[in-house]
Length: 209
Image (cartoon, rainbow, N blue to C red; front, side, top):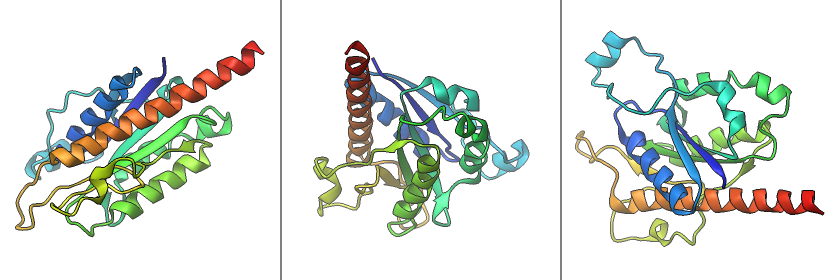
């Protein structure tokens, strides 16, 4: 059974909601899935004044834990077309794992959110994938077998690079992940889990031979 870590950062809860859907998808495929978040860098007083969602139940992850998983699925909101500083700060601490090749051959995947349709969803995912490549991970996206990403009857996130959601309703108000976006997240979780389990089985066969 593959072990999946859904590692996320979420200021207002949109990525938190997507992370839970990703984990559900991984479990549907028969994997175990833990959901953990990276530490907040914003002072509590500032975060509270800014309306951050501070009651998130997921435990805070430790960098050393990453090596214990077969796959890591990262969720981060977009900050000017790239990952959040909180996620970047966490990943910048993986130098020791990189030096010891602890993450080489593990599966990596990314999902995101933006405040608008053209807010940098694809660049955020791709720039995060760059870090995973440097760590030696094998990147998995959201294939077009998830047909929800090509629908034209509604505004929706998701791309072949990974699941995504739009966090603004277009009038400055809050928009929660749609069912189509959540299904994209679940699909990505299942897909990553299936790939991780297939790789694990292949390694077992080679060892047995």
